[in-house]
Image: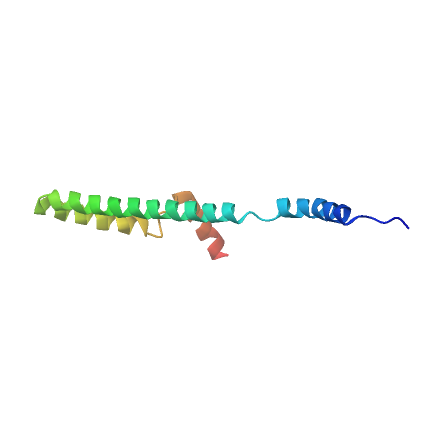
Amino acid sequence: MVRISFRYHILIYLLVLLPVTSCGPNYKVARTERQYEKRAEERRKEGERAMRQAKKRHVQMQSPETRQRMKQSRSKSNRMINNPRNKPFYVRWFNSIRGKR
Protein backbone atom coordinates (compact mmCIF):
# COMPACT_ATOMS: atom_id res chain seq x y z
CA MET A 1 0.00 0.00 0.00
CA VAL A 2 1.26 3.45 -0.86
CA ARG A 3 1.85 5.82 2.01
CA ILE A 4 0.31 9.20 1.37
CA SER A 5 1.91 12.08 3.17
CA PHE A 6 0.14 14.31 5.63
CA ARG A 7 0.68 17.33 3.36
CA TYR A 8 -1.11 15.57 0.54
CA HIS A 9 -4.14 14.98 2.80
CA ILE A 10 -4.20 18.63 3.82
CA LEU A 11 -3.96 19.74 0.19
CA ILE A 12 -6.85 17.50 -0.90
CA TYR A 13 -8.92 18.61 2.07
CA LEU A 14 -8.41 22.29 1.23
CA LEU A 15 -9.22 21.72 -2.45
CA VAL A 16 -12.45 19.96 -1.52
CA LEU A 17 -13.55 22.68 0.90
CA LEU A 18 -12.61 25.60 -1.34
CA PRO A 19 -15.82 25.51 -3.47
CA VAL A 20 -17.95 25.16 -0.34
CA THR A 21 -16.74 28.45 1.08
CA SER A 22 -17.08 30.30 -2.21
CA CYS A 23 -20.65 29.09 -2.84
CA GLY A 24 -22.01 29.92 0.59
CA PRO A 25 -24.49 32.72 1.23
CA ASN A 26 -23.13 36.20 1.29
CA TYR A 27 -24.47 37.81 4.45
CA LYS A 28 -22.96 41.19 3.72
CA VAL A 29 -24.96 41.49 0.51
CA ALA A 30 -28.19 40.65 2.31
CA ARG A 31 -27.42 43.18 5.03
CA THR A 32 -26.67 45.95 2.54
CA GLU A 33 -29.88 45.17 0.65
CA ARG A 34 -31.88 45.44 3.87
CA GLN A 35 -30.17 48.71 4.71
CA TYR A 36 -30.87 50.05 1.22
CA GLU A 37 -34.55 49.08 1.47
CA LYS A 38 -34.78 50.66 4.91
CA ARG A 39 -33.25 53.91 3.64
CA ALA A 40 -35.58 53.91 0.63
CA GLU A 41 -38.59 53.43 2.92
CA GLU A 42 -37.41 56.26 5.18
CA ARG A 43 -36.98 58.54 2.16
CA ARG A 44 -40.47 57.67 0.94
CA LYS A 45 -41.99 58.40 4.35
CA GLU A 46 -40.06 61.67 4.60
CA GLY A 47 -41.34 62.69 1.17
CA GLU A 48 -44.93 61.92 2.17
CA ARG A 49 -44.50 63.88 5.40
CA ALA A 50 -43.08 66.87 3.50
CA MET A 51 -45.98 66.71 1.02
CA ARG A 52 -48.56 66.72 3.83
CA GLN A 53 -46.85 69.69 5.47
CA ALA A 54 -46.72 71.57 2.16
CA LYS A 55 -50.45 70.98 1.58
CA LYS A 56 -51.25 72.14 5.10
CA ARG A 57 -49.10 75.25 4.66
CA HIS A 58 -50.81 75.96 1.31
CA VAL A 59 -54.25 75.77 2.90
CA GLN A 60 -53.20 78.02 5.79
CA MET A 61 -52.05 80.73 3.36
CA GLN A 62 -55.54 80.99 1.80
CA SER A 63 -58.27 83.34 2.94
CA PRO A 64 -61.12 81.86 5.04
CA GLU A 65 -63.58 82.01 2.11
CA THR A 66 -61.15 80.16 -0.14
CA ARG A 67 -60.54 77.56 2.57
CA GLN A 68 -64.29 76.98 2.80
CA ARG A 69 -64.54 76.52 -0.99
CA MET A 70 -61.58 74.13 -0.92
CA LYS A 71 -63.24 72.12 1.85
CA GLN A 72 -66.53 71.93 -0.08
CA SER A 73 -64.84 70.86 -3.30
CA ARG A 74 -62.80 68.23 -1.41
CA SER A 75 -65.93 66.75 0.18
CA LYS A 76 -67.74 66.77 -3.18
CA SER A 77 -64.77 65.01 -4.77
CA ASN A 78 -64.79 62.37 -2.01
CA ARG A 79 -68.50 61.79 -2.58
CA MET A 80 -67.90 61.33 -6.31
CA ILE A 81 -65.02 58.92 -5.74
CA ASN A 82 -66.97 56.80 -3.24
CA ASN A 83 -70.13 56.80 -5.34
CA PRO A 84 -71.15 53.25 -6.33
CA ARG A 85 -72.59 54.62 -9.57
CA ASN A 86 -69.26 55.82 -10.90
CA LYS A 87 -69.18 52.97 -13.42
CA PRO A 88 -69.93 53.77 -17.07
CA PHE A 89 -73.60 53.67 -18.03
CA TYR A 90 -73.24 50.63 -20.31
CA VAL A 91 -71.71 48.57 -17.47
CA ARG A 92 -74.62 49.50 -15.21
CA TRP A 93 -77.11 48.56 -17.96
CA PHE A 94 -75.71 45.07 -18.42
CA ASN A 95 -75.28 44.44 -14.71
CA SER A 96 -78.92 45.33 -14.12
CA ILE A 97 -80.01 42.89 -16.86
CA ARG A 98 -78.08 40.05 -15.27
CA GLY A 99 -79.50 40.87 -11.87
CA LYS A 100 -83.13 40.58 -13.06
CA ARG A 101 -82.82 37.02 -14.37
